[in-house]
Amino acid sequence: MKRKVLSLVMVSLLILSSFSFAFAADDTATITIFHTNDTHARLLSNDTNIGFAKIATLIKEAREADPNTLLLDAGDTLHGMPIVNISKGENAVKVLEATGYDYMTLGNHDFNYGQERLLELKNMSSIGMLSANVLDKDGKSLFTPYVIKEINGVKVGIFGLSTPETAYKTSPANVEGLTFANPVETAEKIVNEIKDQTDVIIGIVHLGLDGGSEFTSEKLATEVEGIDVIIDGHSHTQLDNGKVVNNTLIAQTFEHDKNLGKVTIEVTGGKVVNKTAELINVSKVAEVAQDPEVTKIIDEINAENAEVFAQVVAKTDVYLDGVRANVRTKETNLGNLSADAVRKAAGSDIGFVNGGNIRVDIQPGDITFGKLAELFPFGNTVQVKKITGADLLKVLEISVKAYPEAQGGFLQVSGMSFEFDPSQPAGSRVVGVKVGESELDLSAEYTVAINDFLGIGGDGYEVFKNYPIYGEVGTYEEVFADYLNTNGTKGSDVSGRITVKATAPAVEPTPAPAPVPAPVVEPAPAPAQTEVSYIVVSGDVLWKIAEKYNTTWEALAEYNNLSNPHLIFPNQVIKVPTK
Image (cartoon, rainbow, N blue to C red; front, top):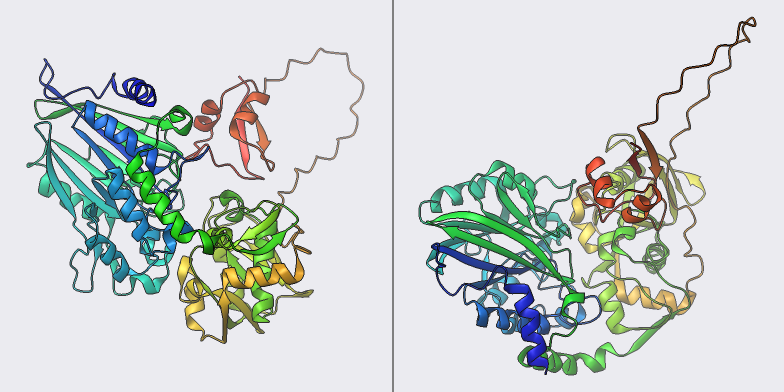
């Protein structure tokens, strides 16, 4: 029965675009690409994630219907969840191989175990790891830059690129001696090298579409001619039907295998004549059976890990907010609690936790070792450094430089409070700082508790590299559990540690003296208002705002030039056309 249901699902997904065993009657060849990005080791199937056992089933069915099917991944895959972290990535490699992946590129978090371990994972895997711009100390590519593969009589070139942000979005120690070359220049060289040898050129890139990034997939498509399709990752962007830039189709699936991406390419006479993108959401595959081979591998991994992960190490009586978009843009109670924990453990004046280090929220109740490992998956230790007030101010400016864009370097704080003005240019936004109850003294010295990632310049905090380690304590998960067991959640409420300076309301002009009475004349009607400004509040999403004004979220996204309509922030101004 499951087999029949599954076949019907795959027929509905493939019949319009992927049923092509060879050349069609009009000599058109079809190539189908399924793809994922930023799964962050979410191996298991549940209500929100498709899971790799179901992806494996979908791919096997697709390849039975059409052998000309590729399965690609755009990075941040080998690290993120305890089920994988405990094996330093090997468990992810086992599952990816069994699922049927052909090629992947490397994201910044794929370097989290260090470059030596990543090379070990590459060597133990049959999956082609592609990245053309990761160079060793001799300027040679650490990974295979590109491959050319014949599919359905079509020569397909596939290259990989990793974000240069990897230099500071993993621990700098993990990439010591490596250079992340300019992705645009690298891609241009590759395209020029392979364009006469190929009919189709595909880039698997971990660049993303974030406005705060120097190099994005959109920049790549704009500046490099000849890339037919970009399979993208890094920014956790959901592109329901892709995005066409300069005749390049960019596809990205969001995150955590909540969607499986599908791109269809049609080639006639050695030329790409059509390309489309779509997403297969977890809700569409609810009845799909889990592949038995992948399920068996995951069950074996879980059995090995179960005893350790099940141990209860702490409790919480309130919901702790670790939602990605929140901890990277504003104060949250989990951010406060985490920063309080590291400050107390270190005995420092100030505690910092970068939002990118907080990976999950926590429901009330028992907290297991497995949940803590999800919360702080990087194994970071707490360091203490003594820095000047002037450099502390620089640190805070780095924290808020990208606001309202979410960034992993946004700091949750303890032992201090500050206010910033996002209307000012980056580097000049912080308008008030208190350490304890006192105003910041630029000439004084303060002890700060940070993690070893920040301590060696991670997330762009080069300023910390200038200071020696003043002290060092345990890992984040250890100090967090100890603090929670000793102090509970008292004092972690959102209380104004980080505040955004409000825009001053317009001053009403003083009324002019009353004029001498004159004959009453009917005034001309005032011109109709063409737009209104809506200030985003916590909990808003674009479709809810659209409903209030009898419009659509797509219209609002286009009118406001939103790069990611699924990510809006409190205090952000949304312009709404009224006619």
